[in-house]
Image 1 (tube, helix red, strand yellow):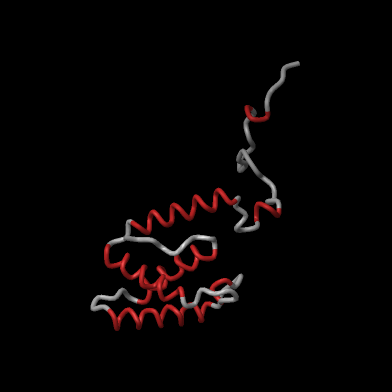
Image 2: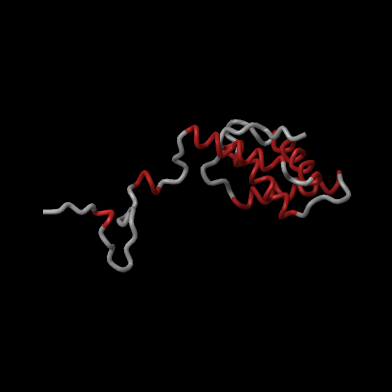
Length: 132
């Protein structure tokens, strides 16, 4: 009698190797990363943010400074599911501040992206951006 490993046997059509059943609860729950993985993701994010063009870096720094005022215990930025309209209102407020301070301020869409990235960093233990 010969032994054949399951991994060497052909699969039926439509099947793939690996997990073929429903995911266990711990695999389906988002945000379960060990601290090392999370720290690595934040380092990657901060490094990539350092590669932003000069105007965008300047705006990101200013957004981080403005967000410092909304960064306190119990702030809505730390809610499990922050209110979409409150976040957009905050982005609109930041956008109007940037328009008053700069000639070529980014549009509201860019401000939203930068704001949400900054909120993500703060929610996951990242420090305020130290971009030169």
